[in-house]
Length: 40
Image (cartoon, rainbow, N blue to C red; front, side, top):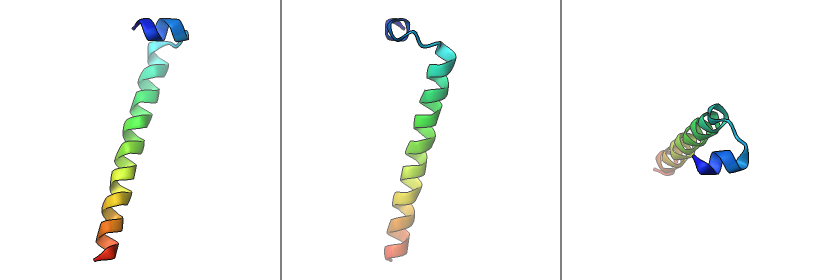
């Protein structure tokens, strides 16, 4: 929480950014899985 205060970032913006990171991670996982499937 101190980090958000120091960065002057509202919690709602942090939450949106965190959700974005989760979605991007899931997308990367799907790309990796599809690449393995295509190699077979």
